[in-house]
Image 1 (tube, rainbow, N blue to C red):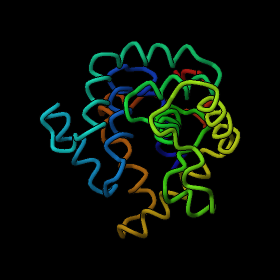
Image 2 (image 1 turned 135 degrees about the horizontal axis):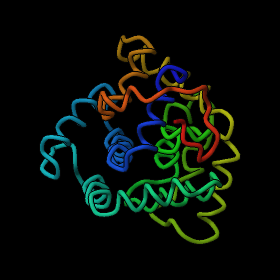
Image 3 (image 1 turned 120 degrees about the horizontal axis):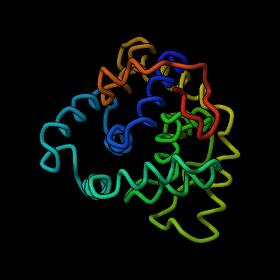
Image 4 (image 1 turned 180 degrees about the vertical axis):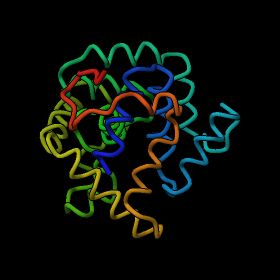
Length: 207
């Protein structure tokens, strides 16, 4: 699953600021909803923009932010070699905490993972360990980012594949089908960008 889809995701997101903004919104939209519905929600978002029903509260704020600052943030993240600095940068998006920020970076090919509720429960971790409560500056935030990177670095593929297998059981799909759903926001022409072996090195453009 990871080997099949993340190289394509990473190539497209790194290539296109627009796809990067869509990846940020994919991470936002996927919060507190049934994952199986996310592709349809992303289609609605593409067609209706700010009027999409999938936008509420901080998700609307995230949408407004990427509309205004998506290109700038894409360019900034692409210039960063350090995973901790990249994660702090992506958390500038309103409502996007450490976990969802890491999800965006994971889709970009960074060797980090998304410790969502499923992964937290599977590992027996403290569900509040990486919570920011909206405070995304200062030493406490930086310490949480550093701990998160230390806890997930080098395990992106493991967590991706385990998560897809877990979710597949819930929705009676195959792990491959669940993994492929992450491509829903990538235009077909960009899905043809040459895949490479993964995991990608930090800040390496695969074409």
